[in-house]
Amino acid sequence: MAIVGFGFSKFDAVRNNVSNKGQIEISHNVKIDSVGVTKLNVGAGSSDVLKIDFTFTVKYGTDLGHITLVGDVVYSDTPEIVAETLRGWELDKTLNQMVNSVVSKFIYSKGIVKSLDLSDSLNLPAPIPVVPTGMFDSKK
Image (cartoon, rainbow, N blue to C red; front, side, top):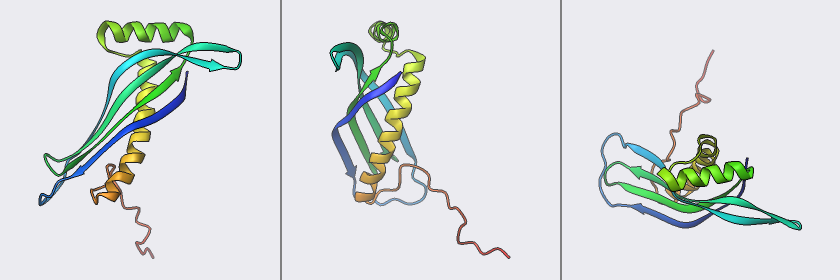
């Protein structure tokens, strides 16, 4: 079980010109858009792997702004897990629990890093809580 490929295909980041007072609710979402099988050529052989298309979104309140990232992840596992995951997706649009956990965590970590960069460029709040460390507190 391994992520063997990853890439973003689209970035959409918007900051609306609205005045904001008080707390801003920031929400994140990972949505799996589609799952398919593709061939991965390794050396002289090849194997079936999952190509998982996703959308990662960050929303800032109701109208302050949003960041949307679209991309795909290539996931490799045993032929049985690949086939089971594809059947589950075709049946009820869900992933195998183990595959979902690995892929969602990976997408979330990559999405947060990219959206942190985009939010900084647009002068939006960081999409993750920034907790003061207290490193400048003077303790005697």
